[in-house]
Length: 232
Length: 394
Image 1 (tube, helix red, strand yellow):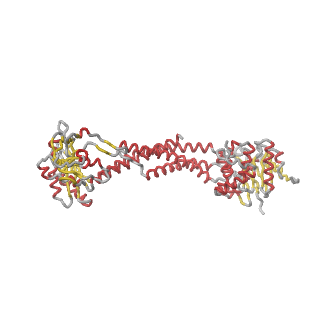
Image 2 (tube, each protein chain N blue to C red):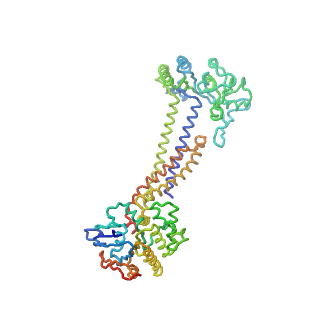
Image 3 (cartoon, rainbow over the protein chains, first blue to last red):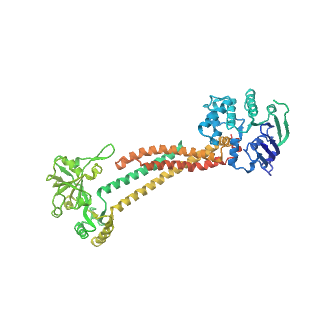
């Protein structure tokens, strides 16, 4: 069976050939199986965010191959990439990235709208996702009326509303206090136990420790790829 | 909001202009149909004026024209002078000097002083008039300079109420005229009432009451003979009128009406052009606002793209927003246009104009189309953003 994610000698180079050339990803190869919980760790500027953008089909690598579910991502059109981001991947960002003018429920509904699901079913699915993150009853609130932790939970609800195979979390606890951060991480672990592949991007080693596998990046290269023996 | 302002001013202007133009056309059409169709207007004019500024063309062309017309009876069925004079009309205690124009709340004509028309015994034939009382003008009335008159239905009611007017004497500028007949109203429902407020006198009374007769109305047998009649009469006038000191025109009122409509259309186009500039400015404003919106909402676009929005759905979102913005402006504009049409209709045309449904639909469509048109560039800009770059925006 094909790997869920397979990247082979992937480069992401900015200003290539110029003096200011930056190699955000410098020949990275990586395979991720379905159901894994991978933390991509590295310091600021190590290329971990670029890595997430590439893996999340938000950005196109300069060179190299990227297979998602055995499909060569390079050959996909913009529309097909949008469909993959919509159905296969759920994103959680450090700054939550909720749309402030929409209510909590509308934010969670958004990816379902782009899937073309009819209104009634859409509302039901969005409410279900909000219940799973413990925010039932807050549907009509605007994001500004909520705390950071709650907003991040809304973002998680939005990410899981479409029941994606992969959840990508970019510094999901970065803007939260440690206690709330732990809640979020344990929620991600719970998601993973139910079969979702989770990719966690962080600079914090202690947070990376919640993952089963740690991939460490430095200067656009993988310097460590370690799977923990212990079952947590 | 200011941007929408120019859209709705433009839309209101377009709406009002088109409505008023349509109203004017309807009004002319109504007037012409009341007088009957297949009418030919003959006008004979002079370029020479005496020291008092009066036309030196004092020749009476009617007898010649009339006898020419009766020589082509298979083409022409009537001819009459078409002129008026400004005499004061008095009967008993009632005088036209004390009559003022009155209108109802909808600016429909109620009453006013009567018009004194010069005509021949064929005036009724040429103007779709039917006699209900007494007798009509006769050839002898013209030849003998009889002081007689026939009343239009409104003039009859104004001076006599329900009394029998036949044989009564009215004074026009102090001269006695005997009422010999009354015409029926032109329409049952009372529209064109103002056109029935007239008194017809033999045109030969001109020598005492004054005024000028430069126009004649010739009634063709039908629309087929209309053209032939025009060219025949044209040929006759060529020989009869001294073209060194004057000239003549022969034209069917259908073409006159057409020309009037064309003039109206032209005015409408010019005014519409001005309104279009306002719409253009508004449209550019909308485009500008939308471009700013795209910049302000780059992050949102990035988020939407990240969670699965295609380029198409981003374009659709911005187009819908621009369309709605302009559509809203359009609705306000239409409302203002409605009010303006009604007010202008009363002020200019003395009639109630309600903008036709097609004008409303057209202007609304126009406003939405404008939104889509001027929204498409910002929408395309929004869709062009790379998801990852858009997400990075703050």
